[in-house]
Length: 163
Picture (cartoon, rainbow, N blue to C red):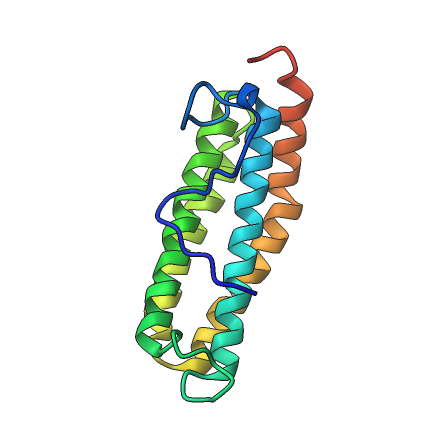
């Protein structure tokens, strides 16, 4: 797997009808959902890549040279940044169609806080980093299959008439 590092949420090639204009966000829920699901996959891939790097260890020959401990720390911070951006975008879009409940928003706030705190506490300890990454991975799997799946289904059911 290749590490994906970007500065903003990823916008992949998209049909012209799916966006408000060149370089703009999608305006219809089906295209928004596709983008959010793509972001989920990118987050899962990044977590898997970082987990592999921790398991291999920066000092092991199997670890790519570009994944030294400093680079890994930057990639972990980038993962958190992308997670926060994704959560904000998801909240904005679910709220726009009336499908964001206070509990869902609270879960997002909690995971953003706990993830940052967990990364800080893990520091340079590889075992703690692995525990942190696996915890984040488990949360993402559970959340996308539970609260997100429910909210996305609700948005699909009520937005066909919305732009």
